[in-house]
Image 1 (tube, helix red, strand yellow):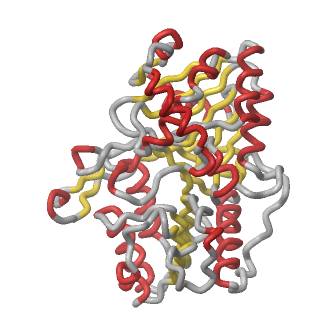
Image 2: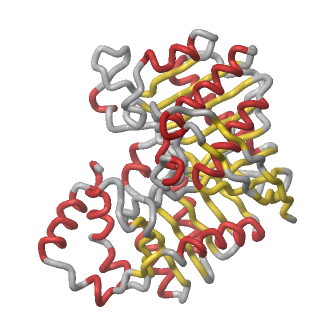
Length: 398
C-alpha cells in the first residue's frame, strides 16, 4: 500500500510561434500499489501530457487512443506526430476521436498517420453523407479519454489533447483537471473497453488476447463505464457510494447538474452528518451549463451541501473522494448528458493512501476557491434567477 516515488524528466518540446520554448517542468508524482496494480494521479496538462508522450515513445507493439477532443493545435499535433513516429517503426496505432469534440479536425489532418499505417475512426461524423449517419444519434457522443500502450500502461481521466490544459505562461488557459496513470491487470480492462467500441465501429475481430470484462470487479482498482448494467455503471456507483458515506464526500465536477437520485443521496448524507463539499468552476466554458448548475445551488446549500467555486482557471475535473477509502476519476460529469447520452469511462480505486493523496490535491484547490454562502447567493437579481431556471429546463439538451 506504500507510495513509490517517481520523477518525470524535464524536457523541451519544439513548437512554433509562441511555443518555440515549450518546457515541461519536472514533477514528482507518487505511485500507489493497490492490489496487483499501480496507480498515480496526474494534475493538469503539465503533468499528464509528458507522462502520456513518454508512454507513447516507449511503445513497442500497440497504441490505443480514444479521445473526445483532439485539438488542431500544438498539443494535438505533438501527440499526432508521436503516434506517427511509432507507427513508422511498426507499432500498431488505432485512434477513435469524437467528431463534435474534435470539430476543427479535418480528414487531411490525419494524413501523416494514415500514410504510415495508422488506423483512425471518427465517431459519428456530422456529415449526412457519411455511411451510417442517423440524425437521432447526433447527440450521443464519445466523451471518453483513454490511452493504452502495449497493454501495460494506461491513462484515463478528464484531460483532452488540447492546448487549453497548458499553463497560461505556456500559451494555454490553465484548465484544472486530473488524469490517472495505471499499470497492471487494470490496463487490460481499459484495453477491453477500447476494443469493444472498436469492434462496434469497424466490425473487425477483437484480438484473441482481449479478455471479456467481468460484470463484477475482482480487484480494488476497476473500470466503470456509462450505458452499462448497474454492476459497472458510473452513475450507479456514485449513488451507491454517496448513500454509504460515513464521514466525508468531496466532489470536483466541471458540469455539476446532478439528477434527482444523486441529489437525494447527497441530502440524505448531509442529514446523517456527513460533510459534503462540492468544487465547481467559478466561470464555466459553457455559460448555459453554469446557469443550470447555479439553479440548484439554493436547494443544495439549504440541505447542507457546501459549494466552492474555483477561481484562476477553468475547473474541468470529474473526481470524487469518499470517506478516505474510495476514489473515482474519469470523464463522467454529474449531469444528464454523461448519464444517458455519452460514452464515458471512470477509474474506481479502493485504497486509503491513494484517497488521502487525491484529497490533498482537492484541499489545495479548495484553498483557492470561494465558498458560496446561501445568504449572499439569495441576493442575486431576478433576471439572474430567470436565466438559471431557463437553463435548468434545458438541462437534458446541454
